[in-house]
Length: 98
Image (cartoon, rainbow, N blue to C red; front, top):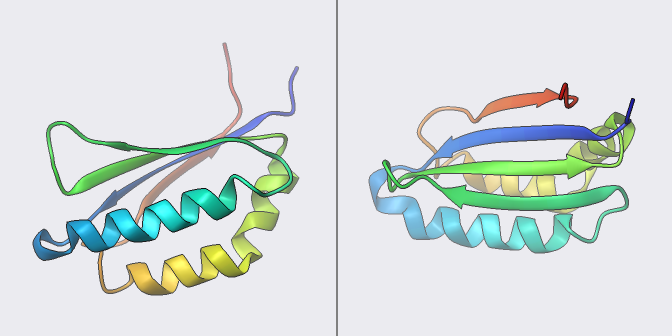
């Protein structure tokens, strides 16, 4: 069994803040891809809701994914997102089953 660990998150911007969200996510993506253990990291724009974006993260293991929550770029993004998002992100974490 693989140690590979996955995280998916759903974030929704306030109507007037979509461009701000895209900017924060672009910076976050650029910096996260440099992290040890980051295999894949990207955001998908929901075709049914222009305010919603879904992250896809693939990490070497759960420990590497856990470390990322204490990086300056993620802490900065979280602070910025407080004023941009409608509600809190919905976050899913786990291991592949098939």
